Image 1 (spheres, one colour):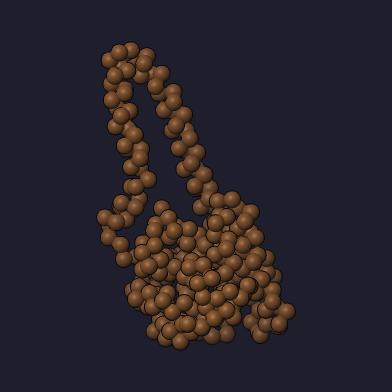
Image 2: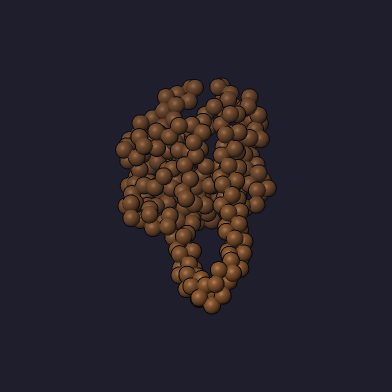
Length: 267
């Protein structure tokens, strides 16, 4: 889903992948006319052999891309089946992260990569026991250590999927803090990847506004106030500022309308 973009901008973003094909077809049309004029139907027929091979290659690319998306959806669904809190959380964080990225005017390619990382930011929890994930009481120190390992587990899982290799570091660092007191590596400030800082803000907002077994979720205004309170210690203040500008109650209502398990990717 795209936020704050005109239909024209969205159309241009989607059509740009086809422009090279359209440009290539112009000289191809002239070539077909020349071949037909000089060699007749047989010349045109011979030209169609490499064209069919090219079409087959393009179809393989399309199929591969669909398989990529199916892989991401399968990972998210596996996580949501294990962790009741995560149901819908990953998709909401993905949409919020995209809204922030658009506010920062990131390129479409970077937004696409960010979307994958945001949707999969908690995938490492697949390696955490359900008893710990869904425990209603206070967690033991040893259990917290296991929970804190999920960013590293997530990076390990993503490394095994070739087309997602470039977002592993983003997933690893989404629980780092601006003041250096986060985990797993305790890095701070701009040492934390920009995409990780974006996901951290989106993740924190959704955590504050989501219902838990032990508390009711906060309102949008209460969550905004909390984000501002922890800006410059836990979260990047500039990204919090952008978030407060682009994320409104109206956008939250649209974000919440997606059914659990449906992953809306930017194409």
